[in-house]
Image 1 (cartoon, rainbow over the protein chains, first blue to last red):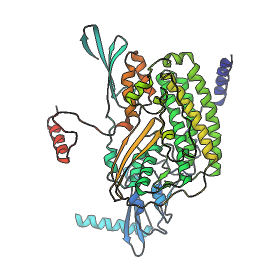
Image 2 (cartoon, chains in turn blue, cyan; image 1 turned 90 degrees about the vertical axis):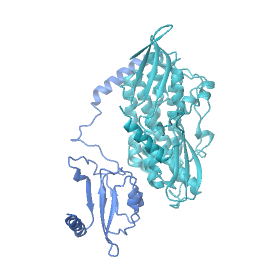
Image 3 (tube, each protein chain N blue to C red; image 1 turned 180 degrees about the vertical axis):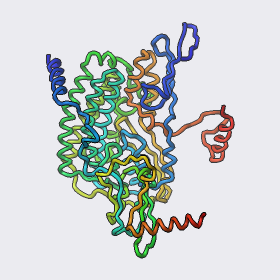
Length: 139
Length: 398
């Protein structure tokens, strides 16, 4: 008898509660605070120790040194390689790296969206200019 | 379907896999049947070989930890913590008590998640879709908890060489306690279902019976061994992490059939919820990591861990650099797979998927290495021999 009442109880509660699935992307679940999303890097404080790149299991981070003495660095991050383990964040003693929990919808039709450059805008411009220059000399 | 003739009439060999709707991962099984009854069984594995052992030889210990974490998508924590514990043993340091307790907590949360996943898959193989849906719904509770404390649902990345990366906050502790209370209730319900549902018992009671002697002969591990009354559990036999402070009661059953494998695993769910509660309430205070030098002196070690599927063993060798010389893992599916081949014989073909699901197989975990046995080749190949073999094979392809 108790089994039958259990069945009815389950059936009625399932009928009343509605679907358990969510209406994504219109509705989104709250994301855990510690959730590891896309990496971002801020140049303040970076000493250029390169530990983030050395310990990245996926080879997603590259630290480009423009001027070590003036502490001018540009970080190239490849989100399509990233395994979102967060080791870079743990390794960085200066707190330059953050894996934010709000940037996790990373799908894109264009592969170039997966490669990101971080740094001061001037440094990025100088790095891109040096790239263009070396391409011109190669030609 | 290939037909072979025999003196007693007609027998058929039924190939299953590597691509087959009943298999979640690739493996090739051949069952020789006489009517519906299985007469012979063979297995061929290796379709999910990823060369992980070779990859980690080229990485430093921290990188290797994340690579090994990806050996398995269900029990990722055991693999990563095995490497972390191995590296700590090689370096001659020990993780702080709080770190060991947090590792233990995640082991048990992972066990709950793995056993609930298995319960769903096994119920699905038996055609019991309602149990599959309910157990996977409840599994979400534990996935949410793991996401909250670690930041990821699958690859938690809680380990570091020398300790753990995450701490358990008071709020998380409360959420964990709430979740395990709910799961304890559900597990009691599932225990009732798997041991009393008439239709389900027809698929599990007396099917695939393994005696303790047979189990010992085939070297089975984990819940499969414990369901046959073999007292084998690394957490009890050789406590690691914080299992010496938080002892586990070994769950065994004597029947050795599929039903016993169900009840042992569901009772382990109850035991894990008890342990999780105990660890959360008595979490030692202190540091989370010990400092470990990047370069680890030359040494060898073996790490044993009770993964949800049974004993997981890692052999590790260091060479004085920051990269391991050799890491070899033996995952629990390999020893358990032998039992499937023996247990299916004499049963109906329809029971084969259930007997296979009964060991909770994880194919991509076990595909570590390929050993070629042939009189013309030795088992140990040099790089040049391997290269030449590849070239000859390429030219000789049809």
